[in-house]
View 1 (cartoon, rainbow, N blue to C red):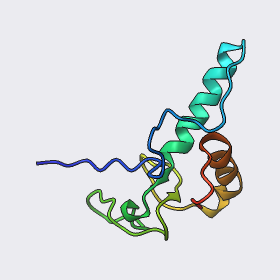
View 2 (view 1 turned 180 degrees about the vertical axis):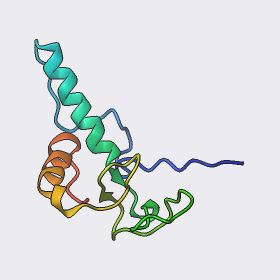
View 3 (view 1 turned 90 degrees about the vertical axis):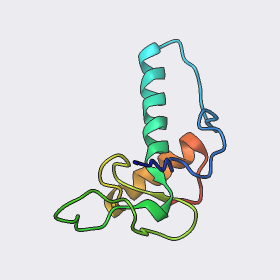
View 4 (view 1 turned 45 degrees about the horizontal axis):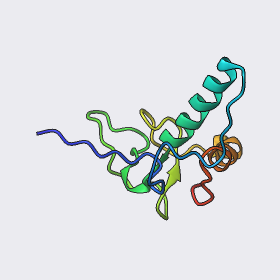
Length: 105
């Protein structure tokens, strides 16, 4: 059978427990903030389940070690699952601001 390994924000016990959050009177602003927080969570993954680069000619695997430690920030957790250094300046700050992650990178 098929298996699924879910590794989003592996250091968070409760994915709904955002370290820094707010509610404003502007529903659109609230939706934007929570969409950004969710995206940050999905892009923090266990480094044991990364994508080979360049991608294989056939198949779909997420079984390559892409970093050290318990978590890594990747570009597109649902597709690329590779580390993109160009995004790190913004991604690291977002991960810290939204979910309090100071270890991924």
